[in-house]
Amino acid sequence: MADPNAVTNQAPPLDGVNFFTQDVGLGDALRPYADLQKDPGLVQIGELAGSPEALSQALPANQNPPVLRTHDRYGNRVDEVDFHPAWHWLMEKAVGFGLQAAPWTSSQPSPHLTRAAGFYVWSQVEPGHGCPISMTYAAVPALRADERLAAEWVPQLASTEYDVRRLPAAAKRGVLAGMGMTEKQGGSDVRANQTTATPSGDGYLLNGHKWFCSAPQVDVFLVLAQAPDGLSCFVVPRVLADGNRNTFALQRLKDKLGNRSNASSEVEFHNTIGHRLGDEGAGVRTIIEMVAATRLDCVLGSAALQRRALVEAVWHTKHRAAFGGLLADKPAMQNVLADLAIESEAATALAMRLAAAMDASVAGDERAAAFRRIALPLAKFWVSKRTSFMVAEALECLGGNGFVEESGLPLLFRESPLNSIWEGSGNVNALDVLRALRRPESLEAWLLEVGAAQGADHRLDAAVHDVLQALSDIEGAEAGARRLAAKMALCLQASLLVQHSTPAVADAFVGSRLAGDWGGVFGTLARTTPFQEIVERTIG
Ligand SMILES: Cc1cc2nc3c(=O)[nH]c(=O)nc-3n(C[C@H](O)[C@H](O)[C@H](O)COP(=O)(O)OP(=O)(O)OC[C@H]3O[C@@H](n4cnc5c(N)ncnc54)[C@H](O)[C@@H]3O)c2cc1C
Image (cartoon, rainbow, N blue to C red; front, side, top):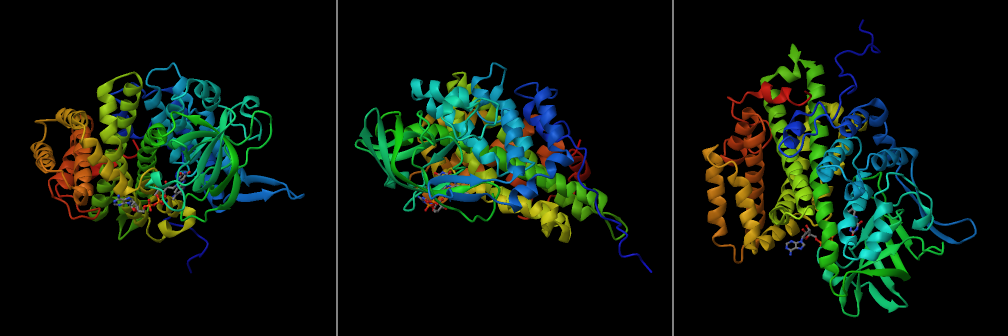
């Protein structure tokens, strides 16, 4: 009789994979911009990310979500959030690796690209804690609108020490940032914000609420509120310089589909002290710098989800047999895996291209700035939109095991729609592409980018031509915004793969995504595709 306790034909735990050095697609995506293949920091992040110690943190951090503590035992408001130790472990590592605001004060070459690669690799361990890390990274370009406020906050935001003490910023070894824009009556349309800001002394008093305010435990927030001259941006510290708490009344924590390790709160302001950042009435223009940087992280975070899901799918199918052979050797499964792999490589390539453009635009390259202006909403729209489909298919590669929490795939799946919602939902980003196109330099930047691959693949050339045709009439084109954004993003991805990936990947991507040789679900690449060659790149 078979022993029911004997375990056979189950994949071993994913172990011993360096998430940086063994990611061949990432190597190809980085190589055109910087020589990072042996970067000691990235190698170290990759090694820890693939270790059992790191991979064991994700489930406890998400299965023990943060708990709101509004009052102390005596009835005083404290507005604190308590986290599982796994959350703090993840945060300490991410901050220690300099994945938050460190690149802004770094003297290393390509600091934003290096940080992007690190963020992408480390996010594969657990996505939720990326939220405060991203917001801290993104707050800096907005803070630079005011020299004094930047001098006060940036060094602390860039510190690689994780310090959770509720102290004035000056007394801390490092601080983290958040943002408050969304209110009950409107998130996309922030002009509808009702929170008021009344001048008082050398600052302002804020009154009102925010309907979504993630990571409310952090030290400082950029908040939008209506000042006498219109919607403005404010720097709101949790603790004031004299040590007293600023009023930051946490009403509830959201009970969310995914992203459960991270706290997302509803907050009320009652004469809360804020310092104006940028001019009165220039709130959107000021905070848009933060939004743009968080959009980059939405692309990186989505690419990371795709990559982790792909690795799990390939790992499982290489160790699991059915019908007399390994699943990874079955032609129908090879088609699925190769299709997932090209999706993931395309996402990674575009994410790293955007990060390289960040370095260039910070250094004053105006063409890179124009490229970011159009490519960020394109990429945010497309890459995050593709992620749910991609992760769902990767999950299915594990069969029933993929539907079970212990596999880690449900966590990735529940997280997968999020990057498409926050920092501008799908339609908002697609419409933002139309807005960018009103500036000739944005279209020029896109054309220059896809033009770098001109002549290499006639199907890509034809797709670019189609986009230009569609652009000849964009007046009243809102209903077609997603279609246009999708096509422009696909051209960008294809052009990057044609230039920098292996011909097998580029050919499969262009043939399926641009030339119509695809069935609309994963696993419908042309039968002539060299599936194995593509899949073997996954864990190099
Ligand atoms: C987990 C989580 C954490 C968050 N954390 C924060 C945070 O820390 N700080 C913060 O400020 N916000 C945060 N948000 C809020 C988030 O940024 C908003 O939910 C998002 O911007 C959309 O706003 P909304 O929810 O008000 O939806 P709405 O603005 O009502 O949009 C609803 C739908 O309508 C679409 N839409 C909007 N305008 C148009 C248009 N003109 N044409 C066509 N379609 C349109 C949108 O794309 C969307 O699909 C968080 C959200 C989530 C889910």
